[in-house]
Length: 231
Image (cartoon, rainbow, N blue to C red; front, side):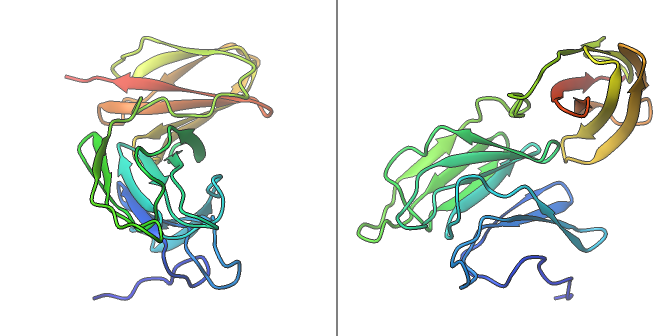
């Protein structure tokens, strides 16, 4: 095995991991100091570097489970002062966590989790008394709109959408930034809004697929989905 750069956080056990595109993610675990952690770290396969991301908002814990579906990571269950059953999504494009419905079945730690296509699977585990053998299928309520938009003070629309690479962003702000990400959370374009309520964008250079357009005016943000279709 080839040696890579050491993990960016503290040494630990019981961490959880998932992958999105060419990037891997490690979160939570016990480092013997806290004793539990709630940090999330991104490892770039190409650059072999670690970058800290937004902390897991469900609290410190270890022995959780995790998987990813189309640009979104999912983390749930685990142990802090007791077995847990809460479930969270993390969007790579916006670096935002969103709480989902609790896991079905009893609270637990040490469950197994994985994804196949557009569905996730969680099962087994332990709650300090009982070992489980149940197995559950998770279907995301939406694969592309799990952004936290609670702080939006303006609206954004895109026309045309779907498009073939060129489109106009109509926003309720005249000063701000527009950033566009692919499903792997990679930035494909960044531009500014200056004394204009609409902005023409050219993404002829990108491949067809689903993208996320984030508009930030310094105080609030709005994120919406863009579909690019090409012959």
